[in-house]
Length: 101
Image (cartoon, rainbow, N blue to C red):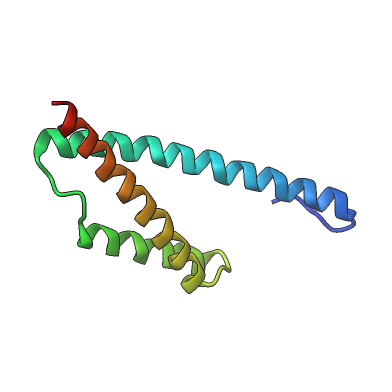
């Protein structure tokens, strides 16, 4: 991360805007991957919800948060919301495909 000491408020906000944009881009990429997972699950008759996989994700998120100075509970809570939303979208993708078939 670049040195932000001495930056004015406008400069710091500009850096926050860049990070926000990166986060949205990464969420969009994640959503595309979720669509691919949904297609795989449709073809292979795999359940949308996989508790074991989600628990693995949360454990990795907590570990990564800790390694990077972020509160693990916060990071896990955020990912729980992200995954819940994307699981819903995955289900909708599968359901809409089934309706059209």
